[in-house]
Length: 191
Image (cartoon, rainbow, N blue to C red; front, side, top):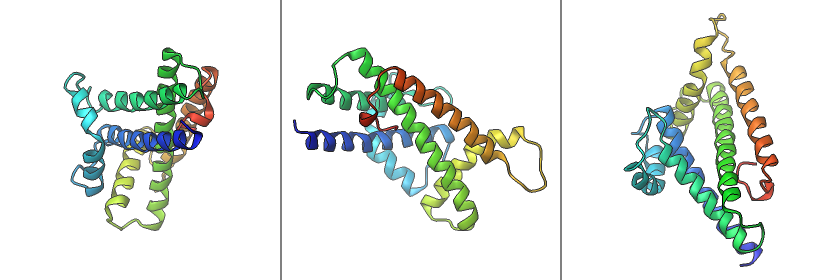
């Protein structure tokens, strides 16, 4: 398999992984399932998660089956890279690397959702486009724990600052773990 074919295969697997992680975040954050964008993403990527969900039931809002499907997809992409000789084939390392890759991807997606929510609150606060509503709803759910902890500050909302501090801490932590495990940075979707 040529390097270009490996890149194309890995890119398609990464796009599917992003959809599955969105599915995980939709369930975690309890978004509006009547949003057409949410329905489209769930219809496109939820089939493998549904099969696994019959064995692994969600715990409250945490849908472990979607997260495991994302890990398996990344493990499949790493396996193909190992079969082409790009990396060594060690099943335990591939599973660990795919777990770190999915965690880093999830944290990166959360970062962009939070940033999008902040920008939308300034630019398009009264727009009800499905994508804008979804980003606003997801970011508000992520800011909510910090808003509960912070006292009222006269109309100023400092929850995004603390959300980004916590998110950056987690990103640095998982990047350090991933690099120490030997994860090839060029092959991970999360970097």
